[in-house]
Length: 125
Image 1 (cartoon, rainbow, N blue to C red):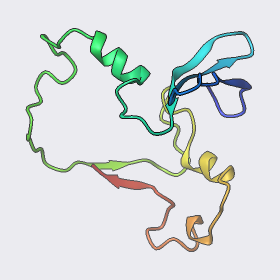
Image 2: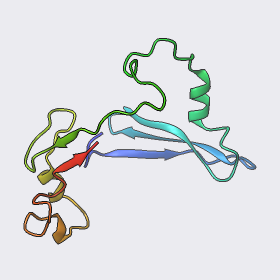
Image 3: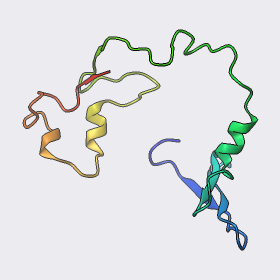
Image 4: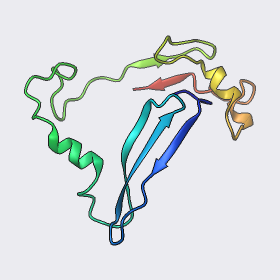
């Protein structure tokens, strides 16, 4: 789903006495975007997420985080993204693109007023 893409939100009316109902979102062509539950009150045990997690098999052979251990620490790494840089298909916009559509602009986001010389151009991870 992308900004500006039309979707239809759906919510099922809860039955009398129920605190959980089904929710969803679909694109115009019928492609499901979101499926889950919403609740008011309750203990959180009847959610779509809790049901899904209950269906999963225990992870026995991790791949992506294979070398990561609980409590492990690594040195900080400096990350830099230029103001007009496009980071590829998985991040298909620049910081400048994001600032053009920000809903609550501030002078601080501009190059002239930002004490770091560029809006959000450096992060430390």
